[in-house]
Image (cartoon, rainbow, N blue to C red; front, side):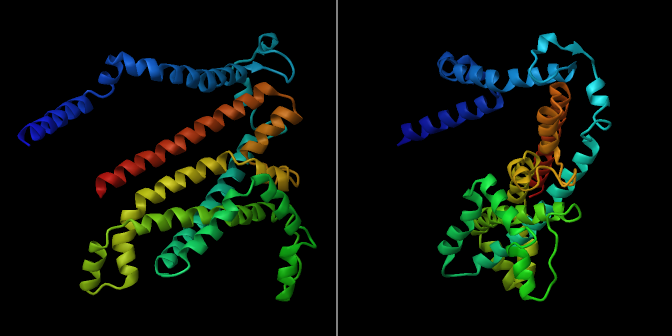
Length: 314
């Protein structure tokens, strides 16, 4: 028994020393490099080489169908003209921000509310969880085409409104196109928030909640002062995942509106597609793509830093 305890203490000491040394022990062991090395090489080929091509292509007047080495070098001209071409970067960024944050706020509030209600249910939790999974697993293109029929002037949405004596609405018009996209996104991705936050609420410790309830706090106070702070790191992670998904969301927007009417739903992914396929300007599209990658990285970095501060606070 003493030998076993001594063995555990030595292992713990070695582990703590290796943790302080970071990745040094990993690279000192050649066996690890033998197994992990090919994975690093494949990752470099699949990720960094295309990124390098995007960076180089954004500095050239590169047209679709021509090799990069035949294009002329223009420097930062593609970046300087992003707001003055057929596709406006500033307008696309604004539409993406409205679409993204509008969807995110509604999904977070509804998801948190429904997740709290589910924790109070004693029956049919499995049934509701199975129902909530359905919108998530449906293909985005199928979701877009289905909602395109529902949002038409004689579609299901206006039929439901007519039951309440509400006049028909032109959901496919330029005035409500972005609102319609937000509603579709809320329908599909609110269940994602519900399932993740419900699972998080199930894992929270009950002792702090019981203690504050004994002190006279009501259910809302117990949730606001105990459960919500403990759930904040999970909320941040879910928001990061959703923002990344919203920024690269192309399928649903293209299936319903193709960026129209006009440019009413021309989000950043649609703008990149139009620059590549409609304008045939690969150099300008590469500049769009690189800014989109940098924007995604910056947003993720901000949320991760906020998550670290939240962990330190708690």
